[in-house]
Length: 250
Image (cartoon, rainbow, N blue to C red; front, top):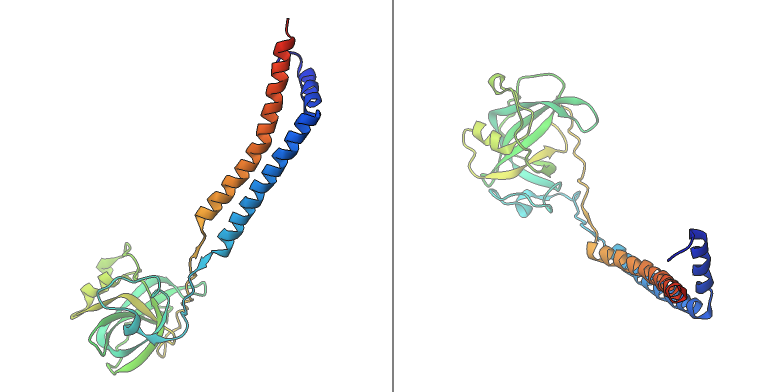
């Protein structure tokens, strides 16, 4: 198109105001509105179809009902409140340094080796202590223990020469136990610590919310179509003005 920008704009709007192009604009707006409505519908569908994984983590269930020794931990098992019957192995306790108590303070955890009535080993975070005490020698008496079942942590750098550890890594603990036998993949945080130790606060895990991304993609696609419908009207009007300029040229 030739001429100054202002003259070009004037010719464009003069053409756009003709009945033909006004009708085309109304049609484009109707198509854009329909596309936008489809996009809104797809977005509503994506919200309606949000999948929230809801698992009752607070009702205590026997550990052997939800987990098997030697098997990895699943999302459904993580954070469940469980009960387990068994006894601690005397002398097989370790202290983990630089741990959180769940309430913003750094402390130490006492971790013990529990053997269930079925002969399966389970790492148990028994409680917290602010100082480096000697590991407790709990009486090896059978009892029922209640706590939250959590996944094993990854081994971290620790001062092994001085016997210090900071991660509750089940594979590391297995190497310290004299007779581990079959072992649960996770560890238990006791809901109530033994006398003389502080409680380890273990909150229920936040479950993943799954959004239907395909519906979101379709919603975005329909919005783009709506914008394209308006742009197509603009492009057709501009082409009409350019053709008129070419025909009018000497």
